[in-house]
Length: 180
Image (cartoon, rainbow, N blue to C red):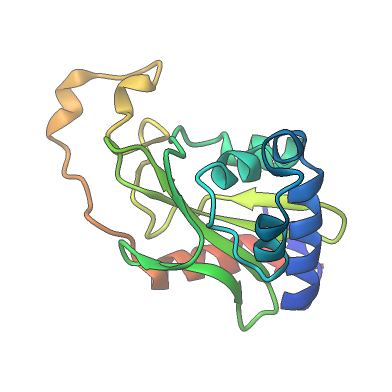
């Protein structure tokens, strides 16, 4: 089943995301009066704080549900630059989809790439399958398979990919999330 998005400029996306983060109860309690952090957010710097990954995951009920489909930690989170083959940050695809590309994973996990995008009325999350380094059998980051209810320790010899493949990831995103 395909998801839908509405076109939005990168600037409007950045503004909406910054506003949503600042309204999040955990942001308010942790950083609400820190002017420098708010300036960084408004400029699109969504990686400054370790806690941003946790805030993004629980931005709203839909994002929480969307990103909850794969078990991974956000101890190590970033949304700027390139790491493990993942291109991070605010990106616009040739089909018009604007998203924030992020990765997250615990020290014991292979990082998982995910995006936050605007569907026209709310933010959504998506974890691509193709090209992304997570265990499809257990729906976990590589390294956290034992967190799965149907874990079989005989699978531990399965080869863990060292990085993602952005060409496959982008194709997955474009096939799954289409314009309204």
